[in-house]
Image (cartoon, rainbow, N blue to C red):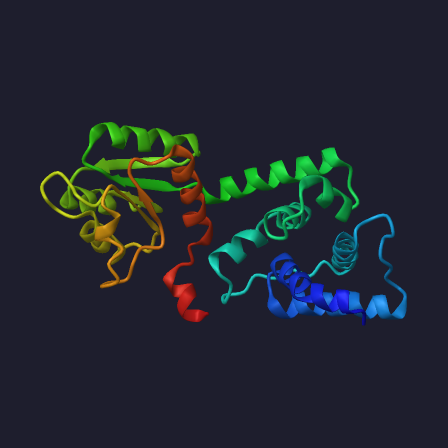
Length: 259
């Protein structure tokens, strides 16, 4: 097998595993494509770059087999990808994971550019609809709480409430369990947003994003550090992006134990 194909094999497996939702299925898909190349039943497109031609061959092989699966061992991100329409999933992964631009991805999937743009737009909308949730804001500064409320609603999420203290936050979470928590650290009565989040996480398995002017209070190395942290003053684009990441990559604790 040519060395350049061997060099691309790990990336092809990565794509195939995400495309099918399972390591065994993805690896089997790549193996089927490789065997086809050796047997001459699968051919590389001469009008594309070598890398793009390999991905086109893989996509064509996948379209013929169309394996896809959702298993308890999958991460939250993998499970969400498998809810997407297959063609949209294939298009989104080419751009978001494999680094093709939209025009290159259209060539890989043998589609017109406008069709690729449609698939990418629909994939994004499908994911956003899948991720829509209820958000609890823990913030003692009213203007910042209003800004966060606006940002959350612009993303299509619902705001269950804005709490200024630890006790208020815990009470709101009990009244309306959130799917995501945005938490400041220093709160109005001297209480702590980290403690509020810890109380909530004892009852509700949700991602938490800390938004604080004092990141040094979290990044001490003395306790588990948060996966999602934004420093004040924050950029709206950064908050929106991190909300999407936190929801997309969150895997419930029960599923993490199975994995």
